[in-house]
Length: 614
Ligand code: F6R
Image (cartoon, helix red, strand yellow):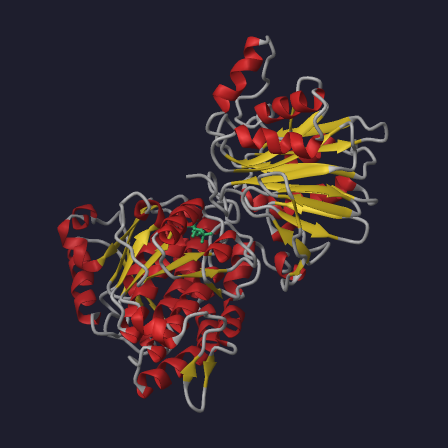
């Protein structure tokens, strides 16, 4: 939530920052703002509520020549989405500018002394007081880096803070407090960047350094100095990131979401590459630090995540139970951490988070770390905070995902969990050769099967045109398809603002059936598996109450033709991997319905890509 970008070097800072903001807009789009040093070392500040285009029209060619500055896209927490609440925020003399991601919980207490001094705040944000505090420190002769450090030390909550000051144009100070809000420094030739995430830096450099909670970076064009919480200088490595900058542009697609849906054959290919091996058929997950003996000693696994990542974890539970014979449970990370969960060093904790920065997931991981649990995280973002807490990371290998709604990272995480289940199953001696063969072959066929599923797009678009006017939907599934029913409902809500409920089909008779009439269509996942006949009964029950049904069925299954109103046939796939194809068809359905309704698909209202507030 909230995107931050800063630049210092010799090139036109204004344009670099505006371009960076465009790449970060998916993190928040309630407002955008920029602060630059002009030729006289005065601060030029422009801010506008709404999307970046509003800021750009406001600036209208008035961008001063500048070689350093900072910018921000906001996802509002304190104060409405207005020009005045847009970042950057300034001190009363207009000499210090600050952008911030996260929440300052004690901002009211921090504001009080200034109000008592008769100073007025111009915004309702928790951020503005940071500029006041930093300016006070500088006034008292404190150096900018130390001033930022002193100020963040007074804050409660978690945040990323970036500040500049007129006294030293060309210098930017960034601080990371707690788990909210990553900060990554980009290293160029005689220039440096700072951003809330990698995507904004990729066009300029892949040489980066991530800040850990508590660390401060003092950034100048030719060097960066890092400090720990105690103010000691730290040596931090420069890492080279593998991501391809071209992957973060929309290309010929109308929306990032559609582009990312279409990238899923590649996601699957990258996810199976080097992991699913033949002759003999086996699965090897890279870089797991646990010995076979340790793996045999695990007595339970707890999977955690939020939103779509939790749905991936729910599918993963089946894989860990089936292949590794580990008792597995899944929890929403935000609930898990407040439940006093029973954990011990034999409980394997697996977290799923595409961003690797979701605050609830990080807090749950911290809880697991305190209990001494071994931890594996499934993540898409190199160097993200989850990857630094966990003992091992299994990457989703999806490349940058820009649309706010997760698509290809879901596919990447389900394949990563499938591989992990098989890998742990082999080490635990729980996996037979036939299962291994079937699953390896099934996974290797996935890229082609996803490609075939995408051919359903015109048919889905035709359904979307007929169903887009409904205001309520029910999604039903059983077994491995239950998490995909939840996912189908979530995706539809997110991108088209239609009310949708996802249910385990067996639960339907225990309440949701009361909702069904001709105004509430049901999407029923009825693949050919051990629960197909039960799904068929559920569909009959919906039909008996005049509900319309879209059935998602297996390749050559005609048994629901004439019963369901519409049928979408998935290509042949190994049944354990069917959620991957179901996910793709659900994504197409929600995308096409959203387009039909004219919704802002890539940037749905109120949402943000990385959720760094609780
Ligand atoms: C849904 C979606 C969200 C995220 C959730 C967790 O399309 O994108 O539900 O899945 O916010 O995010 P991560 O995976 O970054 O922890």
